Length: 361
Image 1 (tube, rainbow, N blue to C red):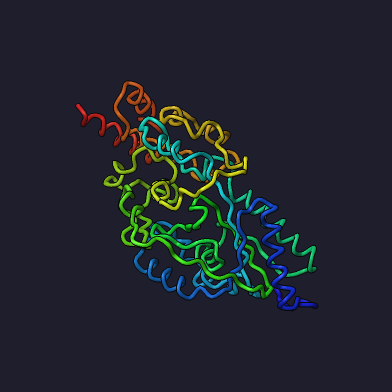
Image 2 (spheres, rainbow, N blue to C red):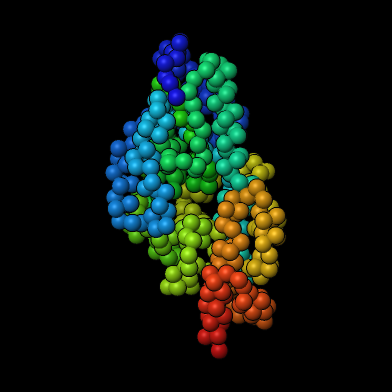
């Protein structure tokens, strides 16, 4: 990417372009657009410390690209500004989410993953936004990212004024809570940056207190190795036995720290039909989903973020949740059906689940 434009816009024109970008972004379904510069030195230091303490677990990719993750111009040469965008995804009222989480017979899927894969939705919209700008000023250098490359999305969004990073390490917006996706356009235009967001967590530590596995070890410090989202999605091997009972009915991700956040009283339901639940995943039972064979899993998760999990880990997670569910003849039968599964990983977790119920006698 080159920033040697034949006619670089004037500062006044760049400021007007920023305003236009925000208008175009809203027209494309984004709730907010902000501009950040590329100085992420503070975030870089925190990332290095986090990696030094091995809190990334299996996520080797977090260290694979060196400092490119925290230095946009090294990842994409010529980058001068980052256009950061957020899009709401909350598919239902939080009371309904609380009810799903409280029912041990139901399978809890993190609400961001109930509908269409957000990577595809946001990437297409950001591409249209970048092209809209290109139509206005002519060719310029740009690349779109949606959780798909070594990009520090939350620090960039914080610098762009989209929110602050809360004690649970998620981004929080004062007027919209935290139920939103982020995406970026790296560009070679010297757009005027927005003012960074100010933190408003205060003395609240509800997210720290509610975490089922105590993964938030201190304010703003998340040990991914204990996080249910990591354990059910990123982790490829056996889930540590000591953490299994604390996972409840979570089978893909965890929303607990968002559900308790007082700022989410301002969250709004999404207008995007793509983010609404598919295949009844918001109400499905553990037994129902545990009965899916690999063909069922692949066909019903097509176009979904769930697909990346694979059928083996899908069954692994469900087996743990069934081990945490109240014992019943139906649960016993479901686990019995998988006791000889070809995967050693699945068999191990099914055996554990059956032992949990055997202990109830």
